[in-house]
Image (cartoon, rainbow, N blue to C red; front, side, top):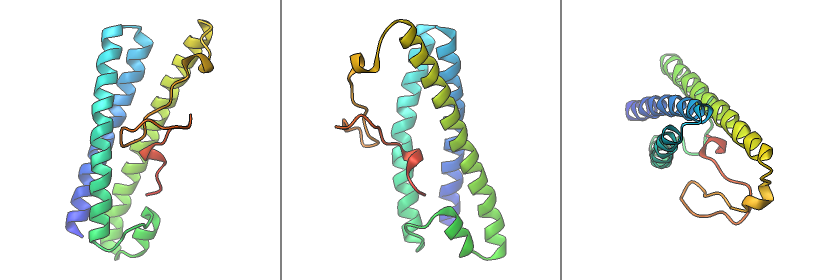
Length: 151
């Protein structure tokens, strides 16, 4: 269980870094500085690849300790009082980091979409499909996200 906890601590720390990166990306977009936007976007792409790998590691470690497929709430129910306290704190940090990533990502998308609308660019004109977490082009217009995966 200690290895699972340690891997979650590393994952949560990474997610907190990703949240700071999303905030920087949003600030970069607001700055209208192309070099800053490019740097923030490149950093985000690297973070996304790292995120996919860390999520795989989390799933493997969770499976190794016999908690495969369980939500954080279900995991907490199976722990003793001391472990539960430690994991509750980790899960709160996890949730906060994910919420922060979502918040800044939504703000950034909204700002960019508003700018495109002011320029008269419609979503139909863009006609591109997003990539999924494995880097494959999705056939449908709806993207997938590791942050939407039930954990």
